[in-house]
Image (tube, rainbow, N blue to C red; front, side, top):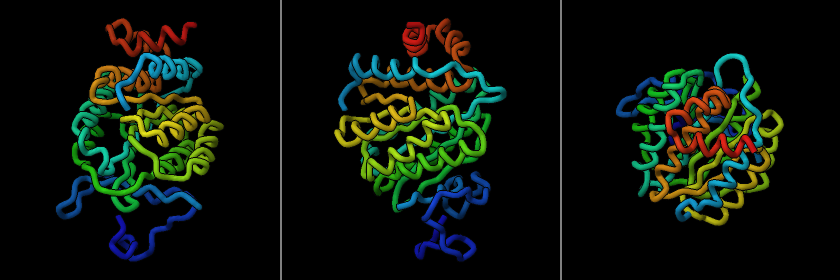
Length: 273
């Protein structure tokens, strides 16, 4: 973490230019009076209730994805906007996201990384973990700080991780967009090339965010869906379906459907058409 002069623990300035892989530090180390921390993500260069149409469009995007055929464990990055505008519904969001991690833990076969941004250019990524419950616990230590969105840093981080080993999906939860949409789309296009779909869950109906999220989803062959407190159950099921898909493809989704999970059922119905 940088000090007030923008320097790291070793006294050297933290770079904010082209993304590069930072030296890994323990993401669970505690500093005095601070919650467990994760490594800093490098900088990037220079609604109302979900409607049936939203869900249909979301699932239509998902059905275009091929079934997971990768050997070994799947990898999913879960990113969230922790700026002040999300504070009113923060507890609800944490509950929904924790439920997703619990479902993934039952299925297995998926490594998950948590990324969040807030405050003055604070953007952090946890280590990859095979125990999603660890990230569910970590999320409870994160609270909201005032600041601008840093979606570009999230996308660039996913691009860097994909360069080392395939990332099966990036899930992003946020409510607004305060960056240059063309720059975001440039990075999104690179994620599309390496086969990392982005699934964006938008809280509310901010028009600028809607346009940007929809374009990022299109470029990466992912999906975009709006939600609010009235669509909590629907969001929970769709989040779980995406995560389970990243872990085991259609076979895992079919098993989830047999357990009565509505999101998996809707997803499979769309994919069979």
